[in-house]
Length: 112
Image (cartoon, rainbow, N blue to C red; front, side, top):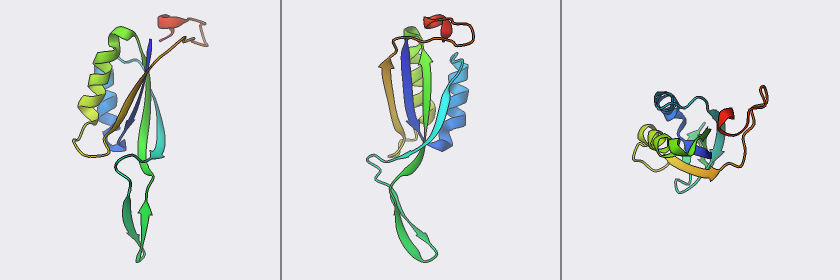
């Protein structure tokens, strides 16, 4: 099993969610996060004062999939989250040792 963590633009969430649903992803978790990378933030003007916004709002998605679904799910995220501009985000893939469904005590792939 694999855990996919994707940092994406908030504006792409609905498209990514719909695409993941179409490729068979049964569930995901989304967090509102803030951060920066190469984009380094930007300056804004508020009531005549200029200030730097260096932590930009992003969304972090977590999806757990079987190994055979990995490439399809990663491609689906890229297809809908990619705008071609700096700040599109990143995808991290890690191995998962174990998954347990609390309600039924199912373990491993049965719990996904």
